[in-house]
Image (tube, rainbow, N blue to C red; front, side):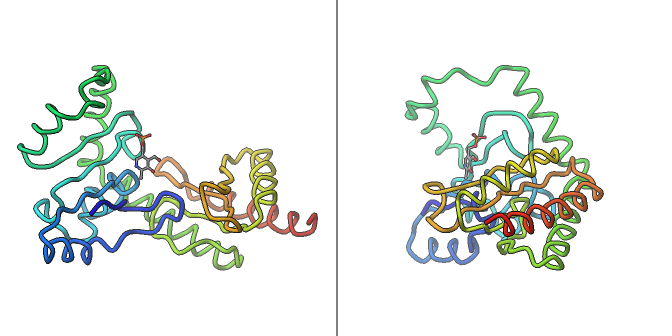
Length: 221
Ligand SMILES: Cc1ncc(COP(=O)(O)O)c(C=O)c1O
């Protein structure tokens, strides 16, 4: 069974504990793509699997990118020595792709150290997510249920989503409008992505601008 840990367009999480149980019951392997959970979720930042209380043996194949929380590029697969050797020998994409440049590998290594040594970044991000969600609820902005750094604001109409994104950009806020076919018709959204580099003041400014643009886009439509 192959699943994302955090779904990239909704920001919600897969029920990994239940899926792991199902896999055990059916003698299947669980593979988790934790691109959006790795470095963010779990007590130590291991990701969605740690947040779900799963040991490595419950997730025989774990992959994540280095290009999101770690801020570099590339990706990794973690698993048993046999699995990794099999991939090295048999994965055509891996064999015929240029390896990570040493500088990128070194930067990823440094980011991993920061991840393990500086938990305050994760705690700060978690606090920003809470602040954003509380503020959005007070403003009655329709943010989808998500505990991750991806906080989608459901707009519905694609043109309105693009207009809102352009208005926010004019205010110095970069938020992409996500439209079909990336998401189902009628569920266009602003995909707000928070990071530990943001400040509380920026979250408040974002909420203020979202409320203003939201109201003016209704008035215009
Ligand atoms: C679930 C998932 N996996 C993998 C990736 C690929 O990440 P990257 O481009 O950093 O390799 C993405 C990118 O958004 C993603 O959402």
